[in-house]
Length: 196
Image (tube, rainbow, N blue to C red; front, side, top):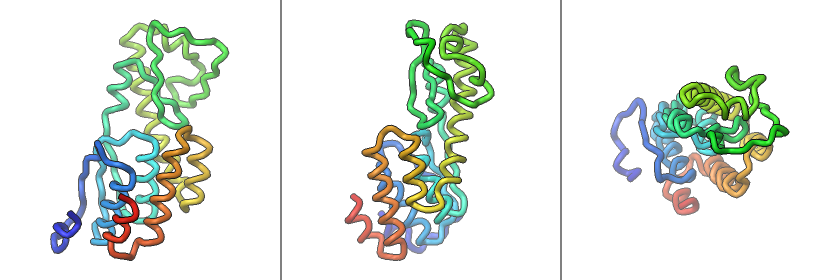
């Protein structure tokens, strides 16, 4: 696949990420960088570690990385609250019993000074609007925070381990980024053999 890009002039690439692993996305972004392509648009990204990968690549390789997704909006429609720390979804619909002792620590303008029970007991339309606003805000904030904490692979790893709960996938991402850094100026096929 990478050979088919040789000789073609690009000012950017738009790529869907559905059904792609972190290492596959990293390989395509690195090869694009090697070819001098400095703009990259990832479609369908709201997963925390994919955002982390995009943030690292934006900070070190690709001049401009943009993302889009509507998952945050769809999830709000289904009463799903995205955790502000790692974007894992939690359903908070009508039938759920929520312990009042669970602290709401989200700092977004829509959740601040509210409780989970308050959100859960809103009429569906109001809850959907609030969750949509919250989900968009925390997704955007996560991308900004990940970018700011991507000064090095080690810095990003520390940040991820303090925020994400899926440490197995963090190790996969960190291994991928370590190899990308180490072999960034090498033939992409060598790195591809190690990662895929």
